[in-house]
Length: 89
Image 1 (cartoon, rainbow, N blue to C red):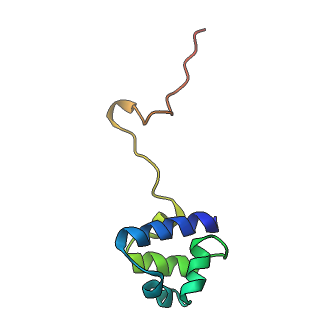
Image 2: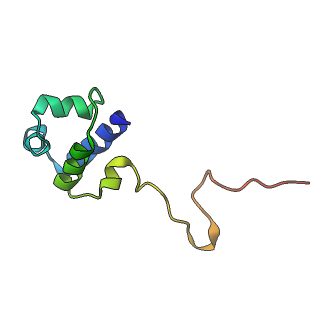
Image 3: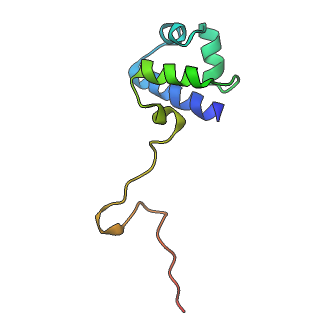
């Protein structure tokens, strides 16, 4: 889980052009500590995840991966790969 959180935070940082140097103090750590968390080498506390979401201006669910659920399209057809199975019997 820590590695997945690190990947999401790192991707958000990259999109927003946020550096470790600018973000680390807001999380209460130094640059190298943030780097270790981004690589999944150290665990994320709930407070650090909350602070990262706040700093990056995203819902906390984005960092935990909770916003990846797709909504059904009209007509009940979902994305490829999740078609219902059919029986020939």
